[in-house]
Image (cartoon, one colour):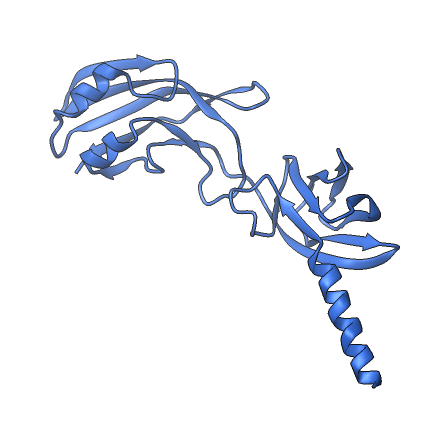
Length: 210
């Protein structure tokens, strides 16, 4: 009989723990357990009664700030082991281990590609420039505020375009449709803005038509 009570206790404890979750809202893939240094990692506590729980961070020089009943900001200052500890009535109900990452440099891309060849059909499918953090899950929130593009055939520049957002100008799209294999487009003067209003100039890149 005592084994039945032990089993019931284990099941109930497991169910209670399963009802508590931590979601990193700052990631493009919330299933990845990673915090990044130098930025606010926004996490959300999912629980039936969140005010009954406490959240603490241990390791990696981590600092935790509560901004609502369910949301917290995590700041990481060094590369080290790190974990979040969730307690209810001073008892641990969830311990989650995290790896620490460093944000790579932001780069401008077309469909995630730069300095490479691309099919004309793929280029025309999404004729715009986006900001990418290579091999990174962090939601950076930056978008392009302007760029300049030059079409190159052989060794000659045949047309230059400018725009004040991420989209290719209509005239540029029209000319791109006439390009053939080996033609290039060179992008420079690329400007991006972050959610807090800070501007950044991104490195130039090129693409070649396959």
